[in-house]
Image (cartoon, rainbow, N blue to C red; front, side, top):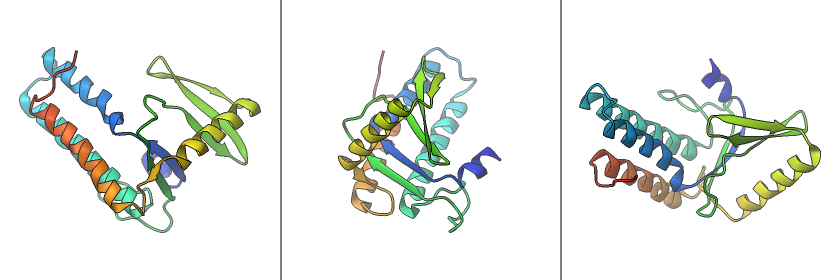
Length: 168
């Protein structure tokens, strides 16, 4: 239900090829520590990760959010995705609800802080608008850039899948 409702909320996202890195490192950690029950579990996880990346690419091309296995509808919310090679590790969010801005900031990996402080929210919003101006749009337009971006992510997944990369 939450995923279906989220398809009705317009969103703008700023991505970087490094966004996938933490997920890949977590899978590697669990592989290295023997926490998977079988190799087939690991293979399934990589398959699902690749499916997620393909779905992200498809919603970018459509410029609309929709659930995996479905088709985009005009009633689904618009989606704008940008790629920026400069912004790393920032998981901040600015939400605008009934004309009011709210900021959500990642804290200690799984927690977040939120504020409606007008000055802070305006600063964060303007910062994100500036980053977007310096980014490449990959939703609806920018097919070449979109294909290159998602292929780079797939290459990283494949390298981890075949143990071609080791991290500490």
